[in-house]
Every structure is written in structure tokens, then in C-alpha cells.
Length: 130
Image 1 (cartoon, helix red, strand yellow):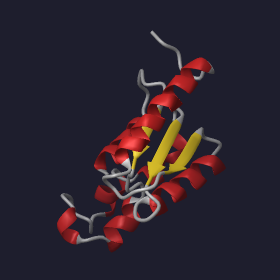
Image 2 (image 1 turned 120 degrees about the horizontal axis):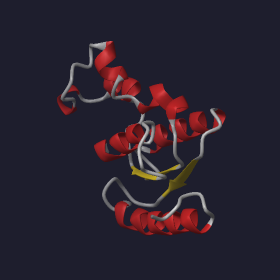
Image 3 (image 1 turned 45 degrees about the horizontal axis):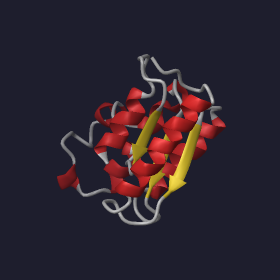
Image 4 (image 1 turned 30 degrees about the vertical axis):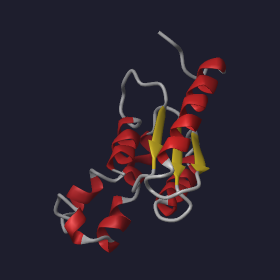
């Protein structure tokens, strides 16, 4: 969803965040804005710059922290799979987990996995606790 888009964009900016988890995101705004329902967009999808600045796929080389992506097996997974593939090719730390369920029912099991992932990141000194 939109939260996952914002999460990945924030992971590309200098900040105090040390890792990020994104659930069920449309991480390719260019593709989605070209094929999605126009009623779902709150920006001008005909304006290339409007699409580009909202498109995590356009800035993968800017990833600055480890990212884990969660997606349901049908739906948003296409965006997460493509983002993951490009991030790995760019040498970025990015994991992908496909979680059973739909856009709503995949959230609870994903959050449980996110908590464990962050704990593992801390134990492996990937992220530092304050």
C-alpha cells in the first residue's frame, strides 16, 4: 500500500533509520499509473515527473539501509518481486517474503515476521540500538 511506498522512499534518504520493512506496496508507480484504475490516483498520472518522484523503482540505487519487503502471493507481489530483483542487482540489502493471504490478511503474519527480522538485525549488529 501507500505506507510501503513511503517506507521505501524514506529508506532512500539520509536519516536516523537503520532498517525498514514495507508491506504490500506498489513499488513501481510508472507501471501502476499506466495500468491501474485512474480513480485510485491523487496525482496527475499523465505528468511524468509526478509519477517519477513517487516511484521507488526509479531510485533503487539510493537505498541507504536494509529493507525487507512483504507481499501477498497474488496482487502486489509483482511489484515487490521486481523491486527486490533490481535492489539485489544494485548490490543493496533487500529481502523479500511472500506471505499467504490477501492485501489485508497478510498483515498480521507479516508484522510478526518483521519483529523477528528487526531483532535479528540487532543481534547481527546490522542495526544499532540507541
